[in-house]
Image 1 (cartoon, helix red, strand yellow):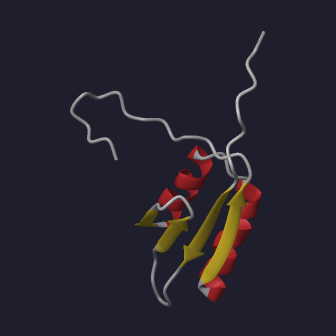
Image 2 (cartoon, rainbow, N blue to C red):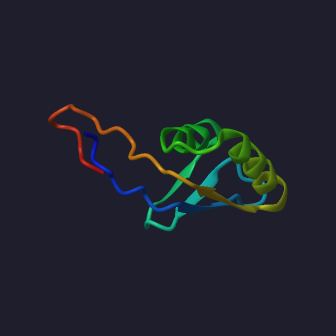
Length: 89
């Protein structure tokens, strides 16, 4: 009989792009903050199970208006490296 695991709380993410910049600043409600280029930003959202159609629209909005917000309804935990000397970030 499968156990009923608690569903993860939605993750609210703010995307910020400074004018004339090629990078996006990702600020998540869980305390995560980092700056990525377009491909890295898409990969970040994809590994967390975001709706990529909504993410594409949000990235376009942030590109044009410098700020957008995304809600990941059922966020996944990103995979961790199994290399023993890799830092646990």
